[in-house]
Image (cartoon, rainbow, N blue to C red):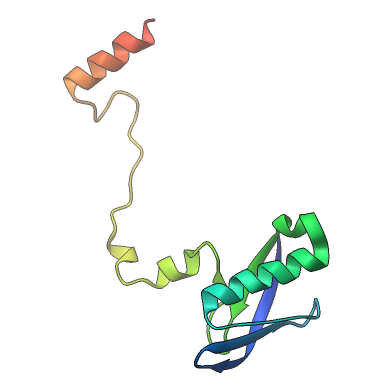
Length: 109
């Protein structure tokens, strides 16, 4: 997947402006979310249907790039590290007896 980074060039209350210098695109919007939508629309106008092969990131000065998927935001969220990580269990372990019996019965059909 290709990536286009829009750099925020001006930020005032109610107006954010960003450019993608390598593509010659400039967009502006009142919020970051709307700025991302405007960036996608500008990319659609420039490259057409192949816009789906691009990831758009918005980068503010002094901040890591923000992606639409929110993966950057989730990593910086204070509760992100406190969530338990699921672990894989071998087949048959971790099932209660009735659930394991029911699963075994379904497998015999």
